[in-house]
Amino acid sequence: MNTTVWMDSWQMECCGEPFALGSEVSWAVVAPDREWLTTVLGARAAATVDGVEEHHGGRPEQPAPVRGTVTGISAVHCRFAPLPGEPGHTRHPVPGSGTLTPLSSAPRWNADRGDLRFVGFLIELDAPAR
Image (cartoon, rainbow, N blue to C red; front, side, top):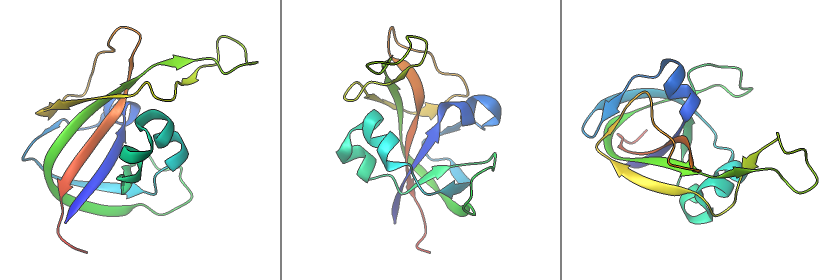
């Protein structure tokens, strides 16, 4: 069964474990924030996300375990800008600015690309049916 997981950049940078295509992983996942993901990824890609990797807690719902083999990894970058009428220091993702770059591995640290900021990974897993 194919499963798509979102991993926020800060989750990986804080204490995430690097992984690669073919890696066996076991992660705790929670329900995705579809509104935020739609802004960053666009509606089509956001609709494919089955869960969000969460290993720090602080969410009201109980994380569910997901295990599988990594079959796809994309680094996601997007632009940030102030919303109209907000102070310039408050920045939000710019809709439609998200880019996906296929990778063979997910390192702990990922560079920004010019004005595009690294925001996370979109990961495909071949996971056993639950």
